[in-house]
Image (cartoon, rainbow, N blue to C red; front, side):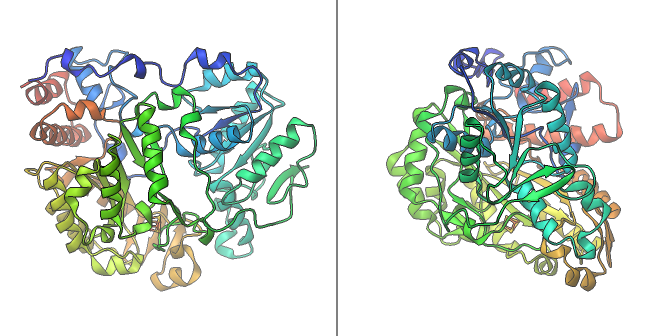
Length: 559
Ligand code: SF4
């Protein structure tokens, strides 16, 4: 049994995430402030349906707070914003910070602008010469416009730079804007360089890996030199974009290793850190528009990986989220990697997206011993024809066997599904829902969770192109589309139906405090997930009372 005190996981080390005044003191004069993310957004169809208590997602620490306060969430919430996968700071910002720091620039990092706006304001007192917006987590031009306008309201004359995936994607779309399907008002509204309204950014770096150009730009800004002739860049002049010359600015496989030992203490304050064991993805799923530049594909040497794990372990990190699109590019040397980690024993628990095929012939017990806590799988559908249409190389039967074995060992599995891809019918959706049910395994040790997305017709994904559109009579854009066998409205209804028909598992709650979950027995964890999901389903149709919620959770959390 766990008492009220038994739940407390906050140590002094984890108590003041990203807001330490002592750190600001040494930032006498800043070269730049880096912004990793504007505000958190999810494209999942099932995530918004999750249980909320007093307007907050019902992560375990929120539920415990709600019970202790007799049906109210009272701040502060013990264990919130730390020791959860979602509390890991963003890797794009950490990478830029480390890169610029190693090139002798004095920079500060804002992990999430919306929640750290006050800190941003106080950093402006250190006279930064530029603000750098990384666009890894930007999906729409309007978000960028809003962010830049807010920055300009606080620092009207500051030099604003943007770069990263969304800026690069926008440039690729501009290249295609001669095609009808890329010359639409929706695209002009959503991507930079197009349409009448654009963010007031002084320098846009257009490269899949623009850090070298960024460093050169900062050097010039510091010495009052122009950035207008920089390669792979653009700037606005009288409402029109001027583009610098295009050059090859990085070598295949080139990478910079983050210097974890040099990073400030507050980067490690949540106990969770992101890392990459590889970059890029060699696959070509038809719905995916991630930047697939072949030169981006690179695999970190196992030796480098282990020394990074050791380095973050020395900084007090307990959990590492490998943010690879596909762990180690789906290489089949996982047994060796696990053995190497076990030999060094950095005491790290880790999670990653992985291609299920790379687990063929892998000793799964070694995976567990190496600290693997959770694996994420993009399974998408249970229907072989839909998987073929998606160009997704997954064997649902093999995936189901592997997931069962992983759950039996106590490795959590979170699986991602996509509803509505061309070819999808009510029958194939039912097949996928039945398949998800077959993966629930409520009696096995590991937790099975899921996220269900409605199909999105995203520019630059293979399915967006003319030939695919013609093949499936596919029309529309992003979350509004129709094809021979389904429409986006129907797909969204199917997502809700899938959410409602799963009874022995639950959706992914990335904000759950992992240390608190680990204090539960595996049976308690399972029951907690199931009860939480069942309450969330009830809350879609009924007004739940405080008593309904407390009396459902209390017997599991305080038996
Ligand atoms: S969906 Fe994932 S596996 Fe498929 S191409 Fe995109 S990143 Fe690669």
